[in-house]
Image 1 (cartoon, rainbow, N blue to C red):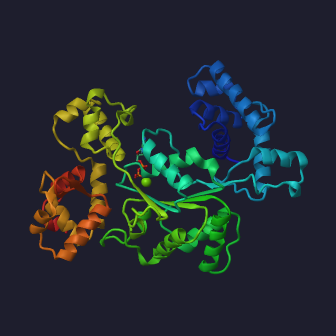
Image 2 (image 1 turned 180 degrees about the vertical axis):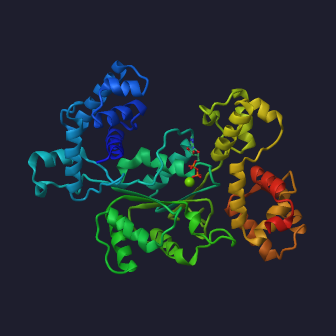
Image 3 (image 1 turned 90 degrees about the vertical axis):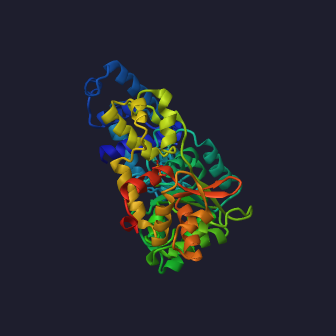
Length: 458
Ligand SMILES: Nc1ncnc2c1ncn2[C@@H]1O[C@H](COP(=O)(O)OP(=O)(O)O)[C@@H](O)[C@H]1O
Ligand SMILES: [Mg+2]
């Protein structure tokens, strides 16, 4: 058992009991105690007083004693944890390794005492959580409405397929992980998968079966049956993050690459087959599965995230002039990644003075934003690039007709391109008396400044 595994193991237990993760000092106490360091030593390493570290330690041992129903002290912490960890890895239906476990201490203790696994009904008590690739959420602001919406869809409406979509950096992954942190105990199985480095559906299904301690059988068809059996018998939640990576670049949005076409069938099965589980897909691009969403009876729901307009998101970034923070947030349309990136720049070049930065009257595109938008442009179809280029010339939203007039595209190409850009959240529809279209402001600034001629992007 490595020290990282110990910290994760303890953090998981503490989180399940208290809803809070270990803080820095508690983590230091766990790490230090595991390495058989004294409180004095741990305190000196972290510039703290020994008495404070000792207090944090005693509170932690008390909490762990309650969780484990054993007397845990600094002196027996390591040996007890090792024994429990080994024991838990031998138990059926618990999956341990990296983060792949939900540790049910009562079951384990029962096992310890009786030492007779055959007498234990672990089925009803154990849950399986594979959150290895899910981010840890430390700061979280707002999004109360979105969290409620997810709860309502999942726990009240039994929505089987949910999509959370929006621009890169807008907070999709964070929102879904926060939802899991708040509701973990309501699911028997939670599996988080990222398609950042995509895998074909058969590998994904096999992985899910393995996590659920089910031996994958024969063909994909049989394995899907196994998986749907699990989804029917228990309330499971499967997350597929970064879905946009299985779509074809340089085509219109949301079209599956040939090798990942099976995912489309899988999503259809998730909506059509009756079961008690849920799949949440997170994506920067919409796809056809997310489209027919307004129907009340539809087993699919979609949440489209927009920016966060709250000064709290700029706290602890070394920024000054708090009165101006909302203007900065407005400038970058509440995109958290862009705000992070520009905060670093303001710190480095303006000594954190937000007012000085805003006085330049420039929507500054940082190096990080440039490389991201270059990537975005490289993924667009030629029709979309033409529309983007033309739209970037206007400071105000324009009508569909005015946009079309300036372009040499057929009606079909124009309409498909315009739809696709909205499905990537690059073009915004503004409803006035009439319908108007506009590029997202930061993206527009990038196109204007870094794509000097049409040939550059088309
Ligand atoms: N509600 C929130 N409160 C505070 N920070 C957030 C929130 N949502 C996202 N962030 C931060 O913004 C950044 C981008 O969020 P992320 O969820 O990765 O975006 P996306 O998945 O849409 O690309 C992360 O650093 C994350 O910590
Ligand atoms: Mg993400």
